Image (cartoon, rainbow over all chains, first blue to last red):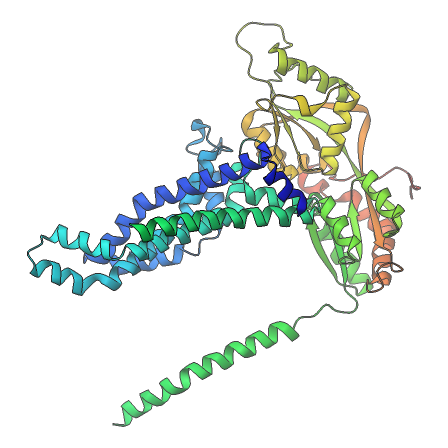
Length: 222
Length: 307
């Protein structure tokens, strides 16, 4: 435990590389999920599309998608014998972002849907009565639900930064290329270096705390 | 209204009923499935478990002895760490130096050889480093490093040669330690290698082979995992050393004097079985039907002595 903390404090470049890659991969996955999932969740909540209820149920189900399954799907698609094998993306951070996006997108979509739906009717009718267009009224509802959407993004980030099954499979845990916090913890555990593994776990929690604190501050300030 | 009254009544009882149900479930989890007195915990490496050997050997042992075995498949270091804490009764691992240290520290007794496989250098059929047919693994690695560093293909003929890459397990496993020994024998230190061609994966043998196959890279592999995975890999055995570089597996009982709560009798029974003629026959034949050759090998001529 002291070993991991010592490395962190001494700015060990390898450990910091691992921390930064974790943040980069999971952060990018959350960003992609936000760009796709927030509009999708809001649309599902605001408009009466036929079949919307079934899409919502399906989304909620995917919130429980096992990381190893998401990883396996991305692996088979990107593998040399898979449909996108010619892109040579397997065992790259890009592959890890894709797999984590598969995990985070349902969470962001589902929680946005729930958050917007809880604000929907009254605010929308008020906005319409004040002369807003349909689009303006919808935007008003989404703005009112921003706390819920923020919580959705943080929940998605938590899932991404903590999972090991998907990044292990599609990233390969290659030192200096695709090793992230969770796969480093797994590697140390497999070697029986339990103290180092726990130390790395504490570092992971500290990093997650810092990200959450920064995000919370930004959201409260906005 | 009767219906409304019933509805209220159902509502009133609903939450307590759910809570009671959950409490019963929790209680069952806590007191229900316990370790049987006659059960043995075997900590072994993923390479053994992935091969499927235990799915054949363990049922045969249990049928004869009535002793159930719980197999925990982890890394060699983790298996020994479990045993050091008394969390396992017996280990089946392949890291001779770590094993001897484990026994010397008083944690293990009755260390016996069970089987072995061979370390070979596998790589793409194109063999850009030109190591095919060499008889020394250290010599092959030396040529490989030179080809990777110098860009020399080691082959006659024109056209740009594909890049030479090597994938290392990088996980302090028995295979990784053997690889480090070979680099040392070649007079090279992997710590100084360019990470562009020397990839340290920190993963199991199967994952490492998959990565090497996808990247057209070389890697040091044990023949057990390679034979089992060969059909899914674009890799060939390029260098098999003469005499073979063996990767021996030993079984060790956790010392009951050090850890009084272990099932020592069960551990000894399992060790007896693995080294008996019956156990050896099962190991010798394992894989022949499915892969056309056995997955593990045994030293010729009955019981082998301690190394």
